[in-house]
Image (tube, rainbow, N blue to C red; front, side, top):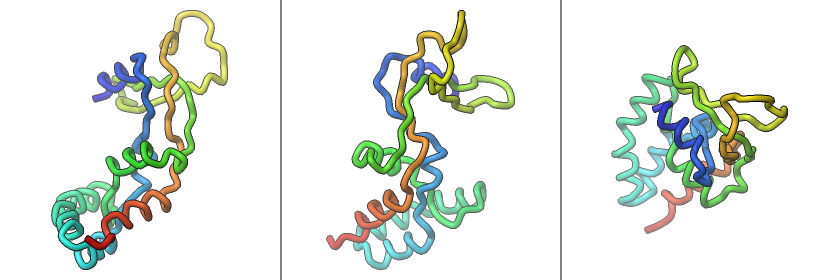
Length: 147
């Protein structure tokens, strides 16, 4: 919901944002999920079973053989923020038209003059890059630990 996102990003909340640009780069491959089933005990088998719907969705919509790790990647930003490259700035979300849902970061590279859509916006941290190999390796190890 772009309107809700723009409202949150315009609030005074102290927020760190991990956008889809980062979370879509972190994936469990189909081979990873098969390994969880074989080697991950009950939890690994459970993860494999509940992931089938999302595997099918990611294949159909994105042509990806695996599972994008949106929520686990956002959690990793809390646990291991050092695996992300952060920038600070105001955030706006386009709420209509062809760019509806697009998120824009104002990194304060220019001084705005007069009334504008950026005036008074809270500065937030946004992850612009992620070390996807480290994130995925960390998460993979969680599911392959012996019970």
